[in-house]
Length: 324
Image 1: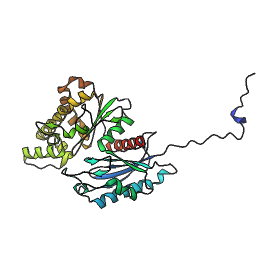
Image 2: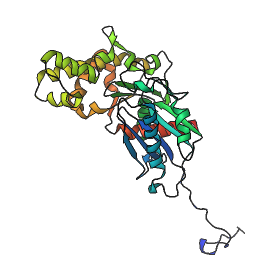
Image 3: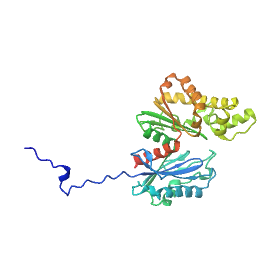
Image 4: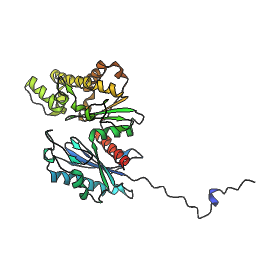
């Protein structure tokens, strides 16, 4: 005779369902050229926990003490957020920062790059850790473009085998992912996985494709100064010179990227950064440069993400959780 099965209503009183405990949130920081943002990331739901985002401005010429204080204050504001409630928080942080930076040792290397010059040589990891309460077990630093790439793969392009991310703004950032692993030392990618180290006509790529280069070229041709890419792209609606400057630069970027996308056998390319707000203007010449070099690149899955900060925060969490 088969054993009897008691219905749930008559289960022994000693059998109590265990409560479902949500996984701990991952604390992260994202440092940009003009801000620092902190958040707690729910990786299972691929989102930033409601009410945990905190953001403070950073001046380009910020000194070491003010820089560390801003990071610690932003992090502290996130950790004290009432929205955290009873959720546990991991004791390993993910921190996305722009290069040049010694990511393994947590040391800034901003020399001769026109930003954060006073931070060159600053041991950010060593000096920030004791300022955080509770003190974390570890800080895991990664490039901001790599964080953007990991975030995009975790949320949107989960099935991508080889994903390349390119960020366009003050300069050019990039990351190459092979099934979610950051690739930097490989003949299939540029040195260190950095597109900004490529050249156009023997000159650094950023002498052609960057805020500095494009605004300077417009001023050289017209005699009129322009305040950043936002103004330049706005002018391009009616100004043929502004449009030509942008078109030429983005076509050159496509030409420079194409051989590496082919060598890496990329199946997905994700673009982010402030200039992507003008994608109807920059997308066509960029795509023309890619496909002119290699028509096979027309098969790429092209994606534009205007939520770059969210993606970088999520990617920093992926990196921290994986490493922990």
